[in-house]
Length: 457
Image (cartoon, rainbow, N blue to C red; front, side):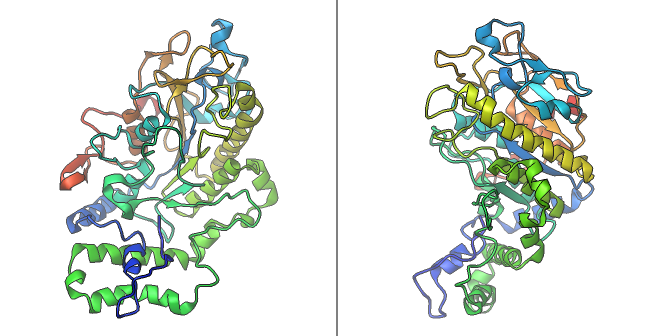
């Protein structure tokens, strides 16, 4: 995350601190070579013909496929659960009665009912795979899809290329990385993280503007770092790392001084009825903010529906505390989520943004077909549903099919790598592109043979 305001302690003879040199614009991200930077610039020029953006809604906790998107009304009661399917608008599928706005807009999105993965049934592994396309192995963290886009195409405006709302994923039990960073690409390509709740009164972006205690002199001292690197640290200035430091500082400085950036994050500019249309929940206001950021030129926005599965209502419906129950999903989680998603899709379409904005709704796995003794459902990576709207996707379709109880894919199994490849395909990225991987070795954007879900387009 960008940080131009960090306080240092060890001062040099120029009055600068060692931390000044490390904290300006994520300057700890050292290790990206000049050839790699040039490759990014070339890729950016090559891909100008496709200017699509992405909103990734990540349903942390994992919705139940059987209770939401892939209902089994003819299965035994302990499988089908308490909810009934309802018909949808001009779509080839039914959907749960707890998602009426989804039913109303079903012609705008398509379901993939045959997703699966073979990693451990813990949240963190699914987070990695569905956001990067790979399970982290050997200490190598692969980059989030939004960070890849940031590397290949850069920013369009003063705003960052990739923003995470409202904050990074928190603890989900596995103590593993969640896959929301730039990984081996380096911190220069980490997302800008809001770290605030936009539903709160007097919402402010903590890292967008300098605090009132920060005077012009100190801010100018930060700005002078670039001049000092160029004029006094000639040996360092000639290195590749100096260019990275300079570029990141200029990006950070431009952000905190940009009227466009301040305006994009200012939800007070939205009419009250628009804000209420999304719902005044944290997730609802994040969806509204995502629309504003896409409209202002951000390439990729990741919205975390929830931050953790502990002591917070989420899709993680084990049925006993500190987790949610099926009834809480019905009464609180689903209505909040359904309202915000419906408003987002409708708003994007009304503004002419849906065709050039892919909205993908992902999760780390599904839930067990059989209801557990506590009346909930547990982790189940063997079969789950994801869905896509906009960005060239044809709405109202179903890709894949699960078996009679929603336990395993029965037709067209889809793995996480294919999901991420679908995002890259919508963005017009060349799937044969290679990234600068660990130790400078070329790293394929997707593994050999991985294809997008073409049936969606």
